[in-house]
Length: 371
Image 1 (cartoon, rainbow, N blue to C red):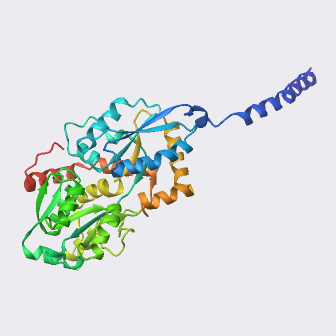
Image 2 (cartoon, rainbow, N blue to C red; image 1 turned 120 degrees about the vertical axis):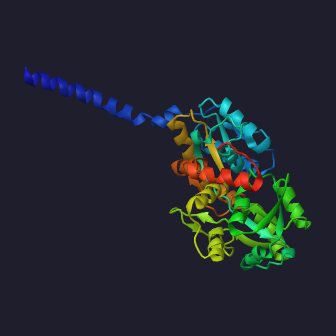
Image 3 (cartoon, rainbow, N blue to C red; image 1 turned 30 degrees about the vertical axis):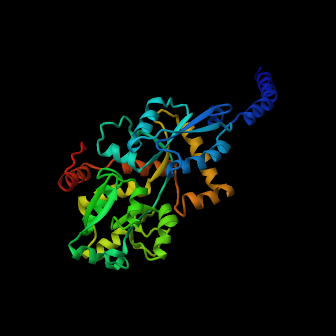
């Protein structure tokens, strides 16, 4: 009886084994089986006008995401301009269904608006799932009429006692990190608010302002020609943080010292305490997460993984590498969890940092913020 039972079991197993193995071999990866964008249309929101930095990067990315996302979906870029990028972010937050058919490009101003308690903000970037984050260096330069000839002459700006003219959008916009940097160095600044970055640069070129700043891409393209003609003097960059969070010089122009170098040289000590935390928080927002690509909080882990995988494949594509050099530069891009951690760090300054920023804005700009 026992032998008959064993014979029957072995025979059944032998018959079923090929079917079992064939079935297992033909089963697709679970994530790939669940996520298929065939015949789908993805809406990629850019919370700014066409032709800007975020728009240019997004349109370059979209062509390659179409290629590397499963099912090769069509991607439509939708520009939703508005103050500080808030309308576009609010639209994404309200309309995203978590099915992976909507994503958004985020930049500095949208994180700033949330941190500073702008009442128009309806979104929460801390709940986004970041696919990739793009660092973008910041370079500060002066007009030769100030008398400086290099970064070594910043002390002249401090000792002069003059207030140097500086154009920008406003004290709670991306210029906040610059105003705090000047304050920490001891340089007096007379802000002229109501200017976009482009208009501020034009005012600088006309000699209407004394100091200015730009992102690395714009600095290389539009400011370096001025430097060569001695019409702009690089003073310092914000630098970059490496994997160990150590500040190093910006790889775009390594001959320019970073802010912490300049601060230590002027004051004879390192930046420390709550003020350092406040400066670093704004540095992370403006430099390390200058731009990022994000999915909404409702997407599944499978969808998130598929997007991160597509982003990594895109950056390995030889055709895309040429675009990266022009649009992004030499910076290392963060993907997936590493990118998400950096955005979270940018968007969640601690209580002491918030308190310091709030006090600074009230004392020096008479601005009340709810943070």
